[in-house]
Length: 276
Image (cartoon, rainbow, N blue to C red; front, side, top):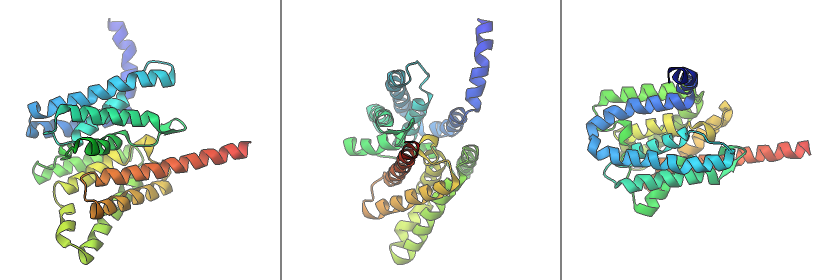
């Protein structure tokens, strides 16, 4: 038993230091105070349902795709994100359904070996139309006193640096708040001011740090990251001003995902033409 644990420790250590392991640690850091404030009995059914459902669906799909068994750690993080965004007052099956849809979307639309759509965003937008689900982004700590936003900001900065996605996050936030400021002068100032207060500012920081920077669905090159972040911000603000639905940030992200997927597909096609 001891020798088996010693043999597994290097693999566990590598996973902890990997982007997924670090992301899990950051989510745990945010989840604990959020759950303590919101209430374990209220939050845990949806959180557990989303994580377990995502894992159970991803395991056979990974086995079919890769021809080997693997731990569905990415799916579990997807379920975790879904639960952190949905209102904790939603029934547990909505979180489970959103996580399931996200995992299916991840496997259904791919370019090369990477998924095109951010699975958490896809599942959350689908759940809005299927169930009219609410989103409180409670995992972004919007209901806690304002100093807690420093924890959210520090965690977001840490992840963007480790993932080398700082240009993407800054591009999104810069364009997003620039548009909001300009619209405050030509439109409804009160509506734009809401984006600078809780919970909307928490949403934007959480989104920029932990969702828009998803490695499989966002570009690695800095120039492409700047364009990707700008696209997500512009579409998000268009949705906010026209539709006004709670998923406006996630909708902007899915459009940016499609742009990045098209860019990868075009690059792959061009390489194939040159090789042929």
